[in-house]
Length: 255
Image 1 (cartoon, rainbow, N blue to C red):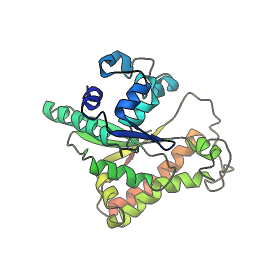
Image 2: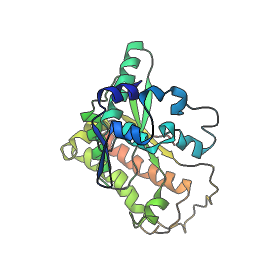
Image 3: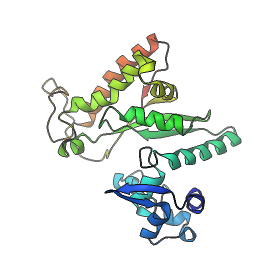
Image 4: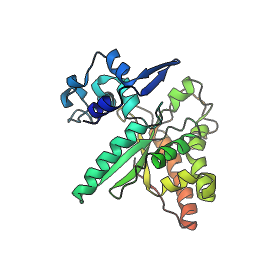
């Protein structure tokens, strides 16, 4: 419904800029040979069935409406050409439905990747500018375990950089709310952290005294799940003590 409505009212709004080429919403749909009359819930193919949670590739595919990453980029991203404007509007509509029905609540997940330290401020700015606050919604931050991909694309040198990018801004905002005013506001409604990736991948769970510390973990290989969880847990524990001392809310780890 939201896609159809937006296509009707905002067809000439520029929504994508790839390789210097700008496209309006109408052009995006034309490039897929689609009109708003073609759209059905079945065609979007984003509903979860019992296979969705067993196979990570199927779970991921469900994030692309009609199997098109372009639609995900336009409608389901906080950090895109429109600064996540449509995504915020969808959430506001869902929130007002929840508020109307009174006794329904939602716990929504948004991603922080640990690629760079600006991610937190961007996400918080999106939440504040889009005014996605609701009494019926709380937020969980999911952290995809993508170190190996960032490393192979030369975005990072070692695992410590991911930890810095995830936790540094949180410690700064806790220490001095004025250093990240939007983030400080947003964190009041974040309840915890989740870890996401393909849990069916076989890996060596070995975690002993010889495991390299994060600043020395510079392999191409992804650290095992237990390694991610240990450092998430260790950093969150310290952060929570610090936030408690400052009289701020704390976070749970719910991978």
